[in-house]
Length: 279
Image 1: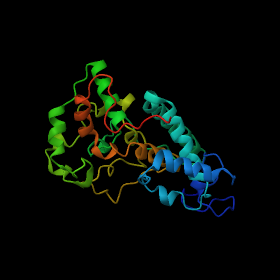
Image 2: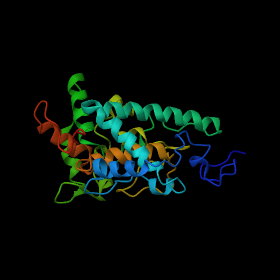
Image 3: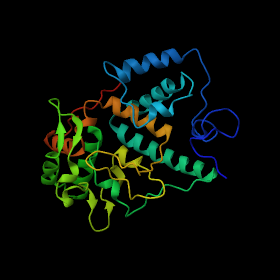
C-alpha cells in the first residue's frame, strides 16, 4: 500500500511524505546566513508589500525549517532577475523541467502521472492570471507566427470580471454567465481542444496538474469545484509566489487585460508591471 502525500513519512521523521522523502528539494540545514536571505527577500521581492502566496503554500511550509523558504525564494528570484529580458523564458523552462522531475519522483512512490493531456481542456474555460512579461511574450509569439488574437473576445470577457480602481481583479467574476463560446481561453483551439500558444503559455497553465480526472477542473464564477483534485507541489508554489510577488503590479490584471495593454505598448517598451533588474 502506498503512502499518501499528506500522510506521515515512513522514515519516521514525523513529517508529511511531500515534505520529507517524497520531496526532491535540497535539504537546507540551519545556517548563520539565513537572516541575510530573509533581508534580501524583503528588500528585493517583498519591498513595500506582502508575499503573494500561491495556492496553499502556507500550509505546505508547515514543519519546514525557518530558513528554508527564504533561501529558496532568494535563489528563485536571483535566477529570474539575472536573466533580464529572458527571465520569463528561463522560469518557464525551469518549471517544465521541475515538473518532469516531480512526476518521475512520484512514479517511484507509486503515484500515477497527472491526468492532463492534449484534448482535456476544462481548465481552459476560466479566468487566467499571468505576468506582464508573459502577456508581451504571448503577443510577440502570435505576431511572429501569424496567429490572430481575438481582442474583441478579450473585451467581452472583461465585462464579466470585476476590477478595482487600480485595475486589479477583485476576485469577483460572473465568468460563467457569458456566452459559452466566450468562456474559453482566447488561445484554445475549439476543434482540437488544444493550446495554440503552448510554448509560451503562462506559468499558471503549466502548474495546473489534475489528479485522476479533468471533469472538475473548471470553477464556476470563480468558485472552485469541491470535487476538484489537483496535484500541489511545494517547489512549484514557491516559484509562483516569487514571480507573482515580483509582478504584483500586473499579475491581478488578468491575461485578457494585459494583452490589450501590451497591444498599446510601443516596440521595445517594457510592458506595465515589469520588475526592474537588480542593480
